[in-house]
Image (cartoon, rainbow over all chains, first blue to last red; front, side, top):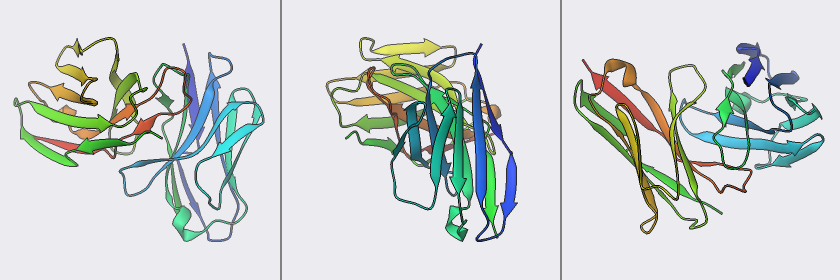
Length: 111
Length: 112
């Protein structure tokens, strides 16, 4: 069966520090991978998605970047965090025509 | 692109009553409509989905209906229980698409 791992679960980082969140998927190959951010516990904002290794699509201009160095690995990064980067970050995988499976999320607090 | 609207944003019901959440979509080519439940501090989980060749689908106390002509779909929860309290998201996508378009979420509270 397919599983998705996302870590860390919580993170407190100072303004201006770098960020690296990792997501890995097991039990499937060539998945579509997604990074979402959820502010104030509600709406899901798509940040990046990837349909293959090295292929990244960005939905909104921002202080973040994403990379997919391996088929089942998706990384969300920032060189310098802003206060506005605080939120709940969710990784997901899926394929066209079927539902997403979300990871358990990372609660990021920038102080 | 697709635009998904979801109502209401908050919903409170007494335990045992029914809850209905409604979504509309704009892209007539969308043909897959999943619903997600998100409990506090966790990632959303798929609870039910429906494809455009079906008008209704039921799974125990949860049902989803789809009206393709009107471009709207709804989630129905019967005999609500306190553990149904969560945020629910609808979404729409194309079979051949790479993206889901989510509604803004409904915070459901079931009052014991």
